[in-house]
Length: 275
Image 1 (cartoon, rainbow, N blue to C red):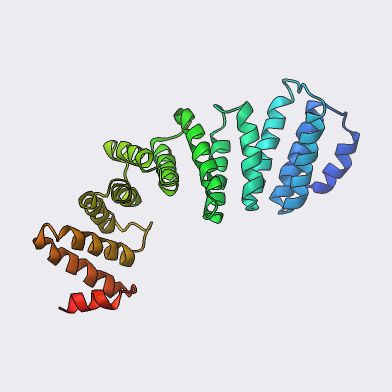
Image 2: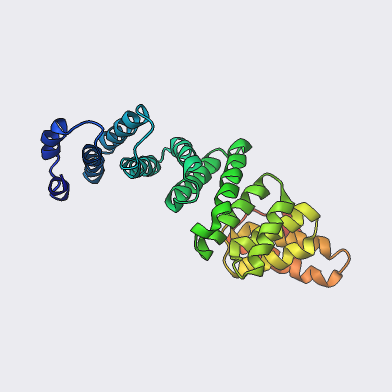
């Protein structure tokens, strides 16, 4: 069996599999290797079907023996990964959630696949916030097992969670996560921008918005393009200049920067700049 897999001989598996005993660790391992070889050969649909057949046959004969358990778990993980590689985000999230209910603290790869596919679903359905709510729930569940992930990975998940809270207009929760990242030195360019947006949208604090948005612009954040971010800074400084006229010059600088990027600017603002 191992030789057939290593040599890429699908034809040998066709000969071997029918003669193996049922519900035996050797036969189930052979089925798993057969599915992995199909995947390796690029026969994705056939690999999915082989894994589905292996998993369903064992589910129908529960309880699964301790010898077969690792094989079935590997098959489940491979099934989740195949759905992710096929960009079947919904199926991937459903399978990953089901898998992690049983093994939540032992499979960082399954959490990765769940978080990534759930994030893709939320991006695909921006107008349906129920997907964003599911993403937030998935990430909160993931972070309960933070010991499974590196510091950088934790920072990535926390930023994504903060972005989910922001999209749901839960600015306090987003701000709390971002300040935690700032405290540990893990707040990146987009994190600075998102924190600035939280201050502006949640608290109406345009001074704090300018502070963090300028950091984000210097660090080349891409959550918002540079032109529109400069335009936002112009508007913020223009509002602040009503009480601090010396900030008018800063407003003009950002309007000019926005103009130079080619972003659309209203005629009134162009006349203001020219004046």
